Image (spheres, rainbow, N blue to C red):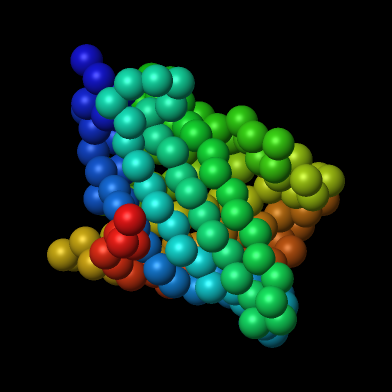
Length: 155
């Protein structure tokens, strides 16, 4: 069985995320005050073979000109997708409502982790992601992600 087929069998909701997405990430503090915002373009792919069952590519841009690019892969382990990168490690699973949940420990922020919920709207054209951040055992901030499906860039 290919990597893609194995992931689809274990976590069919993951396939809803296949392709290109554009959107915004906005960080807010516990009082709702905007801490940071950045535009994000994301490509989610599901290789048939190789080391990873899932690969995510992110291009982030801030209004002040800063940019960042990240690429990371996840491996299927039972009914969970598992990540271990230089910035975070953790796992994700599918709920019975076709939402995805993630628990990611931040390796680049001491004593911090977040719980992420991802849900694709009916029709698959938009999705919402919410990261609930905790540091030293207390809620610290939230990241609100609003994304919409886009066509792949021209080659």
